[in-house]
Picture 1 (spheres, rainbow, N blue to C red):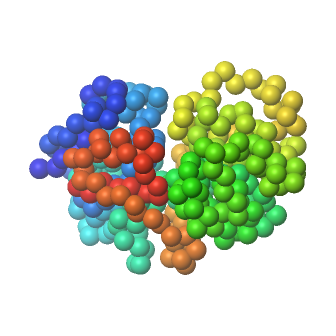
Picture 2 (cartoon, rainbow, N blue to C red):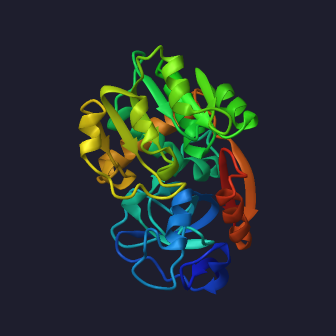
Length: 324
């Protein structure tokens, strides 16, 4: 019998309940996946709390995982039973078995374990589209990355270093700042002890940044805009401290004709071609050793609530996973 975490009503970590489930045979274009590792991400918290509402109850959270194909549906020709695959972006991941559209999974290459794949797909592909598509980072780029010691942050810092950028990271406390520095950040700012806007001005000699990547939201806005040079790009891609409310577009003109975008991975991996390009680029930088995936916590699937408590309590760094 398969097991899954279910949410019957929006709420705190206690809303995550462990249950037996029946997983049907795959339909046309689907595969059945026996999961070996499941990624835990902040978007799972947004689903659980209702910030990103789901259409019906109960639902199973989780948007990332890896495992083995155990059954294929009609019309699936490029995958077979026994293939190791990974995915990101399809909710329903907190389960020992699940159905997936075959065109939304990618084969895991040799040299990458299931646990590494599960820990990196959502965060790694997020870092990839942000650094390579939303803004094309290169050796001439000066960027600010909030929460540089978080899951996406540590991957992005390593990748941005490979691209030759000047990287300013923020994190809470000396220990997390040391992690960001070890990952390759040029400068780290401890937002608990320093005002990040003042430090960015100081570090850049008043020139400020080309792009700011902000997954924090409420607490770092509008300070993030004050770190951008005229015509700079503000990328808001998460709400760890709460959403940005009542945004007034006039603030962008007042602070230097700034650009602002709110990207999602779904848009950047909308087609099969975009998905495989993004995933393969991620696999390549991980296999090359330029980006190391740091799995810092492993929880049993039934202990998903504790994983959420630790994530929301900012007790985690790097990537954490659930194991069925």
